[in-house]
Length: 201
Ligand code: GRF
Image (cartoon, rainbow, N blue to C red; front, side):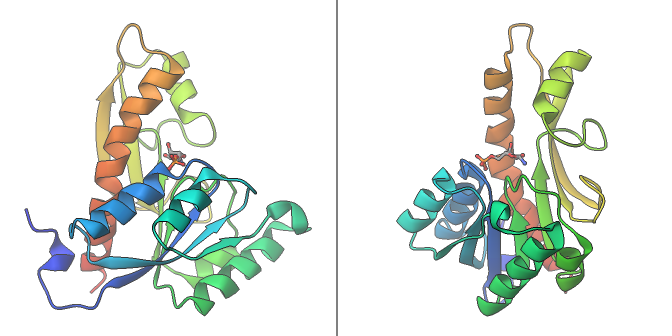
């Protein structure tokens, strides 16, 4: 299937990606762009933890990186103001929170209304917040998964764009289950970006 935003002669979407750690979802988006499954360019990666693997991955892809360490700010709003300034400086149109482990404020949401996307490792609205994979394991559910949604100021809320289901197997550990969820995340995140962009036109 040709993704909706490749069907027209639209200019590439200008993405800003925010990540805190490993960055495999950043890489999935970069890969989808390289494979021409998503008509976009990543203008900047913002990360908050020095040494985050996401930054190394971005450098490999030739994407500019900006470290905004939340420990250097005395409020969430202060950090978000700096994030907004950086995203604007790089002329970002769509913001992708790909493993951004900070609560965002109205400052950021208001700067990109309906233009921010988050990926969460559960089938929302189940298991919001941190340790979602662990929450699902502990709850004993048989199916979990991942969700890509628009960002609202309330954590892990906002309009759902795409979801993928992942069965929980009897021998699953946190690691094996999260690994299978991530396989699905890497598929639906680029698809959801294309979908959201197509719908907003
Ligand atoms: C993903 O499981 C995502 O759903 C959650 O944080 C994790 C980030 O993984 N929000 P990675 O850094 O993209 O590998």
